[in-house]
Image 1: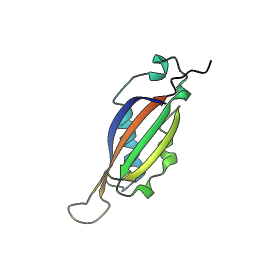
Image 2: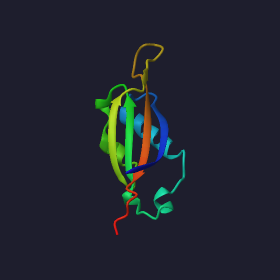
Image 3: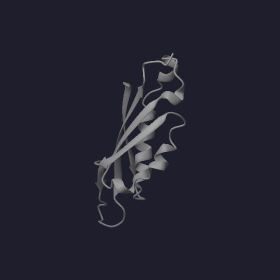
Image 4: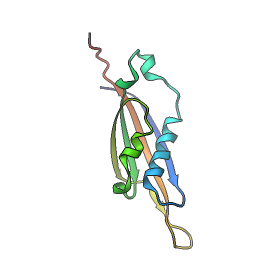
Length: 115
């Protein structure tokens, strides 16, 4: 496998306390940073993309990976969710914190073509 691209993103859930939504927004943020069509550039099918997504939030167990997978229309995805990101308490001290998720998304291909 050869890593061809890495993008980073940040997403938030301002009021609902939704770790999956914050992570999904971070993913979309990372994806919208580029419009590179790597599969087409190397004449590979889009399903050949190996996509690794590293997600960081304060409560990783609250991220629904199946919800994140819906963001990708093609490619083979692997998700690694770990502690990170940031929860910002409300100034009044009540209610859900603002959740900040960070994402690193990498795209790789097996550059050895089957003949």
